[in-house]
Length: 347
Image 1: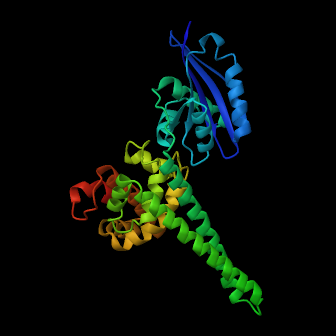
Image 2 (image 1 turned 120 degrees about the horizontal axis):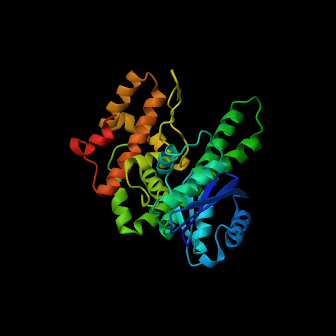
Image 3 (image 1 turned 90 degrees about the vertical axis):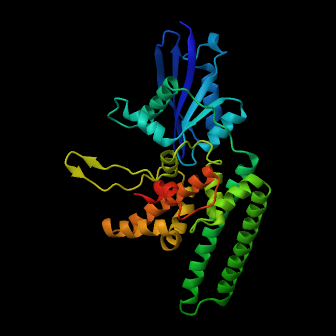
């Protein structure tokens, strides 16, 4: 029999990657290897490639068949591997979490381990038509780096402000220590200003991106940085085909907690891009006050759920969907356009 497809299924965590190799021949017979684990860094990636080039399951006489590397878009942990494989001219397919989750439901797995997950991903790659992952353009890549730098710099500034507050209200605080903290805060404030200016210049350098961001920010509660962060983190929504995929990628998918007659709470999974969630959470506070459709959603959920945090998360999720909708339609926000806004404002 002749092989017609080779797939490396990869389950990724913060520190490690677990892989399973799968093949399919022209008689549609599928075979899978045992699992292997490597470190989630360049050293581990090189060991993976070395194994791929020598493992028996990928027979030498079938070298002309491309090897697909299939990974799940779990937060940011897959990015280094995806870039490494793409830069070395390998075929990479990055699958959104909701697609993989739905596929796993069809498998007869009663347990969940890294080995089983990698085998499931390999099986997905064998059975499905795969789409080549495209690395972000230089513009989106730089914008993502800058928005993430802005997040970390803002967090450091906040930590220093909290430290300053504690010092100023403590007994007989050291004056020189207080002054140094103030200087550090001033330094980070300057850095934040420079980063924001650089982001604005980059956006202005691309007319289509600039126009789309301006359209998105016409919606109350969505600021410039929020819009740019979501766009850059999704690479201009290039992998996103619908709203469910977007909310799953961001980690806003409900996590079921039911067993028999027990009905637990259903919080969001948080297994997604934390930068997107952070970008829309605080703006949701503003949207809940000033964006009329979302304000109605917030008030209704505060009453029905009796939980302001749950209501705010729901608003943040809908705010994310609104950004996606305005991007796709490439138009300004119209609060009176009820038909087009139905999917955003309804629960």
